[in-house]
Image 1: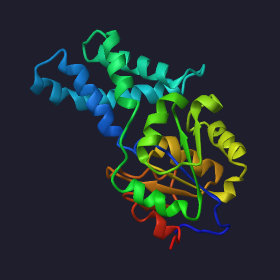
Image 2: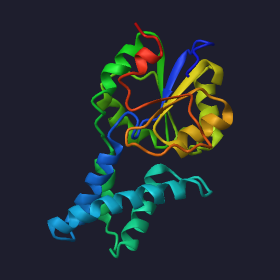
Image 3: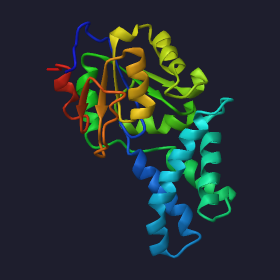
Image 4: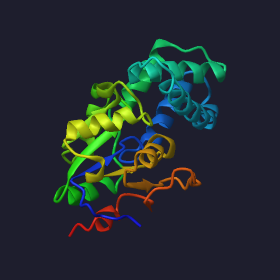
Length: 232
């Protein structure tokens, strides 16, 4: 059960997947990339696997030093995913991916929930991304976000503690004055568990829970979050 004492001053959110349709965007980009190489039925069939490998390769690259910007992470991950699928990467593939990910639409439940939360709390995003890449996506949410903290600013990717610690220094709060809301178990719940941050897991896709990093509360989307945080 989520405890609200001390009362949080800021609610922090993961962005990709939690607030916006990240998985759909990655699959759309993968399909568009494969459509230039394969028949439509084959592109459709293979796009999910390519998207899944692209995501996992990106996470793998984020965890390897030295730090590099997220656009470079995506380019490297795309090259790996395409090569493993038997395709030679092309410059237009990178352009398609970055263009698709430059503005991702929010989940339908997000604007209303954030609007209610904003009446009581400051809102912040903590995201494994670059400042310029996420800007269009934040704008698409349609609700003002007080702070957008990125891996580019901290030069570290979740679950590296440095990104969260940089966020709290920027926000001017302690971890006890926040609640973090995220979909990613490895990227978000892991660091929350390790640092003792109150967390709400948004399980949009019915994942099995990792018992090593239990959240304080779980929801299937953001619709119930304002009531959980006692917003009138």
